[in-house]
Length: 133
Image 1 (cartoon, rainbow, N blue to C red):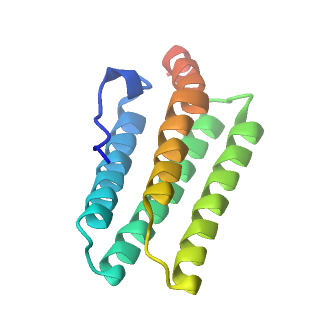
Image 2 (spheres, rainbow, N blue to C red; image 1 turned 180 degrees about the vertical axis):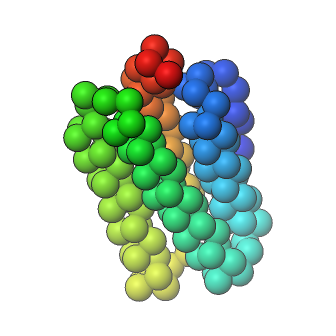
Image 3 (cartoon, rainbow, N blue to C red; image 1 turned 30 degrees about the vertical axis):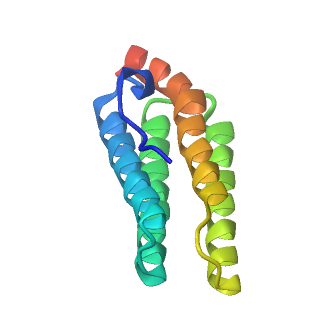
């Protein structure tokens, strides 16, 4: 599987959010490489935990900006955040409890999860913040 590459297509044009997204993409790529290269399960678990934890922090960061700037779609956006974290945690628990390794399908799921959110609701948020900040 190839790396995710940061480019203007993924930019929401709000620097602090884009910086977070770049870090999440970097962590995704580290996880992807670890899986492809067959790194130790403990290492892969640690990278996956870091990706999920950083994503949760990033979501709180976005939610703070939405609150500060009166974003009307806050409730829906926050609900999506909660669903995304829950689905990633479920995947993580499945892997840990069943003792399975992270599969290519899992990586593809995480890629869709990350890129889909950026290209969807985060673009809407970026447009709004660009107008009000």
